[in-house]
Image (tube, rainbow, N blue to C red; front, side, top):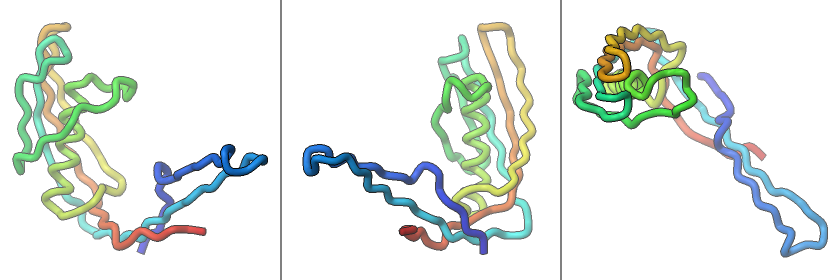
Length: 135
């Protein structure tokens, strides 16, 4: 089993209105996971006009994903293909996320006008068994 702390699962509440002194209540959570020892694979393609108008997206299982952050270092079309490939691999294996993912991305770009991306990903499928609160 693999246990890790989920970074984005912290809630904070400031109770300035209740007390004269400031205090903070935080809740942290830990995920208990299992992973398989055989890699799973997924793939996807995406294309867009003018780098922001998606024209097509396709995955092996027909699963579609959303566009990622503008600050990821990838173009929106690359981000779309990458996320869809990860989603395809997770859907095929029944995983919640991939451990040690490896990507292979091929991009055909015609300046600013048109971009086509194909992406494949492989990684070890990880399933969340339970999530518990850490006091």
